[in-house]
Image 1: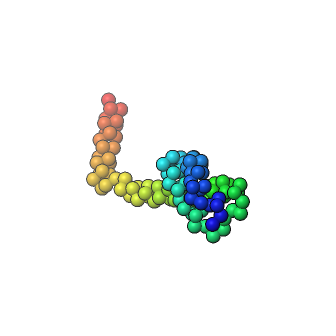
Image 2: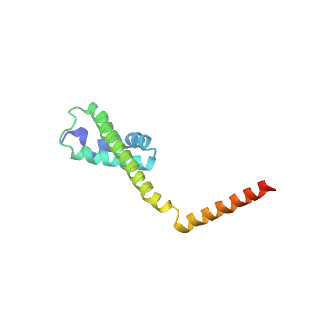
Image 3: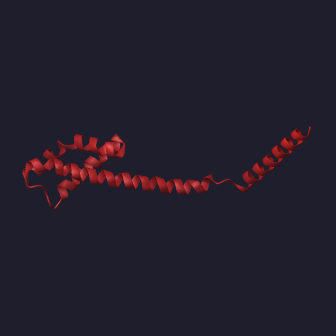
Length: 116
């Protein structure tokens, strides 16, 4: 294994990677998770940088892609949750009837008040 890809060399970059991912996600804790995943993926990668100076940009690319994927997944998850809860937010039949009765009473009061 290339010495630049030893775990200690990779983990030296995790704080910067976490800040990058946290900025993309708007979530520092989520950024730490993404940075850890980036290091794991780097260790498992088939293609690796050939020179030590290429390590940081390569790790940042992995991190950025993972963070963008996570952000998209979160948005998708949020959209699905909103869609599900939207059905729960629909008024019940009783609520619809109560609103209609209230509207009729208000209309009657307004109509009665205008006739005086």
